Length: 422
View 1 (spheres, rainbow, N blue to C red):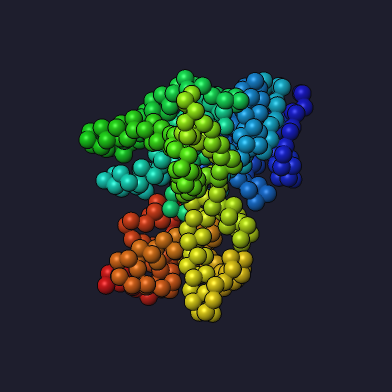
View 2: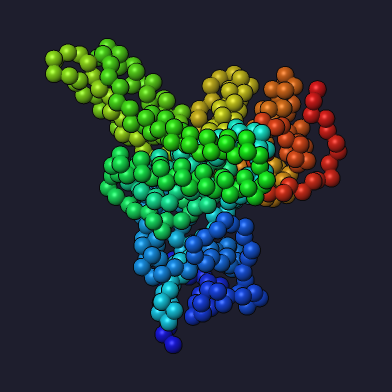
């Protein structure tokens, strides 16, 4: 018997001890610590293994395809793009197969589980999902990545503040180029529409959806390219304006920052052949982590972009209140240090405990801030953190809250009943 060739990026004892010399279909519990994870259909056999305090996905592939996907996932990681992270590759010469090992994305869920939590008559929640897919494809295309098989089944979703973050899961058909042509981008979008529509129809049939809802879902799938194009246009616009209107540069930068993109370089070039005073603006846009990097610089917290926007808002409110109390302006560094110690750290742990320790403490804190704001808007006054904690703990969450999309079952805590409507 030929010895398998192991390449493990996480050479932990539990992974090394797995039966790599046996076909994946022969891996059975209790000999192997398998876990049943609800995922969609796959062209290839996939098993999930829990060992060394982590969950791993193992996919069986032909060696050529496995090598290609392993390389693409490595390129995506180097580019900092949202995709699952490769953890190893094992070649099994006796079976002419390879096993691709990836780290399971903690706190994520597959679209079938997500849609079961979404009320069919509230399209705004599905809109968040489609925005996430469009944003993911824009990010891939900006970095020269052709997905080739974009679908709901090949995507995982996680919560990032009040938005969803989409993650590429399957890179079997993906290619990395220096730059994509418009034809390649449009072809990828055509694949997206076809696959997403098929995924939604399968799901609608499984849910027993009405014909009217099926038509709505098809229309929503066909609208994803419009969501993609709107974001693409913002990132690649090259406006022309007079030399005296250079203030518009700041407006462009602010708009990109509001979307979460850092601006790396601004170029102003003369426009036209008449020697006039018209300028064309070109902006080099970096990664979509503008607010996350700012929060990390101030506090050391590592968060998603959506989470950072929420937390920076709370930090600014704290800074304003602190300045009013002491009678003078408080600098950013001092305010950030006090906010972390007095507000963020204790409150995020309380919020995490309120939902039974599911998800992450940072996301729980973001949910708490969102719920407190919604309850305060409804009451016409600040309801305070304690009341928001009670609502979070008992899962009595305002319908407008994106926290309603959380899939983890929140255990009901033995707390007194509360009335949310004043």
